Length: 428
Image (tube, rainbow, N blue to C red; front, side):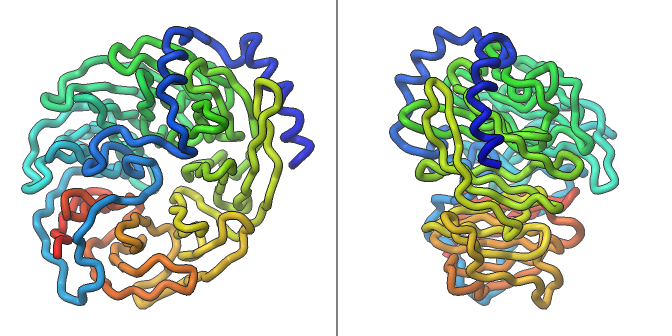
């Protein structure tokens, strides 16, 4: 692995001569660099009370909500529920509205609902349905920024609409969908909308977020299933595209490729979100691939990476980890786990509970607690600690296949299975 990584400076030189493609963002470059924060991870898009994109304001699965009912054994209070049609989309919550996707009249549909009542404000067709043996509909989650909503359909239509009316502002179309459809969400950074396009369209591609005009594209690897992930290293802003066969790192301002890390997984399923922390990049995939922690370093005007550890201790097929106080929490393809970030050593592992297997579940964190939604729809709440997972509260809130990450917003929990959304009042 180390020998493969040390060759990547040559990849970076090739990208500058054309393989990184379409470096047309010199004007944007200065603005982005000037705005780059002296923090390591993603920056928030808007009011911290909002949840404007997949995995939240800081793309880490951690909510800033306070005053939640997390240890009570009393039944949860259902605020509302409604059928919206099949999709795997999670929720973006901004300004009293929630944005998600469903299937309406056989088409992938972007929906805007009232957060308090669930009443529909508007709906907009994305594209035709995306059928699958595991569940039909849109895979990605809407992203909300500055009065606009962005969504990538399963077939490859990237659509930007007005957040108030749902009317189209611009769209683009990609034609290189992976086996189970485009699944990543759209990353908004400064003036850019960044998406996983794939192949000739760019492993990752950036567009002007207001007009949809192409700005740059980077790489030509096939599309993966993860959302582009931004981070700051040595005061420069980068983005990781977790493709079908690699992790590609590009300068956010220009799209110039600075590192390509080969990462082969069965069926090209690289879907879990990368995590950057304290100069280290964490990657994880399922099947037999496992996880690795890489320490980044400068390599001329490119980046290099040295392997810290690699193991099958975490095998995130499509769910992502949450990092808290040096520990990774995840429900991977085998169990609910806690693993040390820097060493890869497992702290605990729970494969079953009274509700069944604890694999492929979803996690969101708030007030130091893990809110764990099992694949079968049971919500379990416990303090996040390397000493073990001891739920103080359990409730069956859904049935059927629950692979979608729940969201906390304005004291309420929003969760879904393939077709139904539920909202619970979590306020003390």
